[in-house]
Amino acid sequence: MPVNSARIPDTLFQIPEGYDSPASEQGTLERLTYTTYESFSYEERTKQLTKTAYVYLPYGYSEDRQYNVFYLMHGGWANETTYLGTPEKPNVFKNIVDHAIQDGKMEPVVIVCPTYNNENPDNSDDYGLALRLTDNYHNELLNDLIPAVEGKYSTYAEGTSLEELESSRDHRAFCGFSMGSVTTWHTFEYCLPYFRYFLPSSGDLTSDGQYMERIVTNAGYGPEDFFIYAMSGTRDFDYSAFSRQIQAMLEAPGGIFIEADHEEDGNLAYRVQEGNEHNGESAMQYIYNGLVWLWKGEA
Image (tube, rainbow, N blue to C red; front, side, top):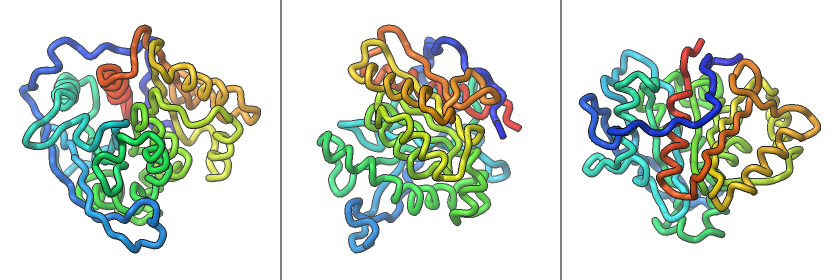
């Protein structure tokens, strides 16, 4: 059943002026270290890796309340510090999030910035390798990262078993721009039972709409069990391919993907910003728009 009563506006919001400066009510960034396994031999679990994610806790974070969790993946030529930075050196997007929460534009959420980089921090610089790593990332995400995050912080998950993560899927979103968007589509592909919300932007997976429909039916879900909020820009080099994927999904014969501005009416909204290119400024606008919509007036 829908848990978000907010309508997605017809046009994307611009990030308000002044949001790039520090807010008076500031959330905190924490460095989370966890254990996983080398991506290409993951199933054998023969090579252990120690990885880092950065976790944003909203101002006033308290163990006495439960928080929705927003997993935010970087794109190519980037890493886990790209969006929010580090505790020692926060990036401007942390200020934007702080202001949005302080001004009541978005709900206080836990934001997690991980990486699909494998054994080398420069893995995301290699396009072909990055594509393969995003396809594998669900193993680490589901088995290692989510338990590390939601076993430590106060979320809606009562525990970290697969059953408990599935029970709390309404309170979990995955978002990404460019190669992070490809990771978002793969999360939809492999982890639909554990996420309700998906926010891909300017990074396509396939133009086969029937394949995307099979993901839903094979997982035992229906049109009412997820929502995709997709975004791109008219001057983005992936705009055409990304738009073709969205259109193919909406035109697929099973009728699973239903265009809507509201979660009660369907499960896919696509917004395009005139003039936006494939860059970090556009990415921040898309992520901001997703954050100010998610979990508003939830049941």
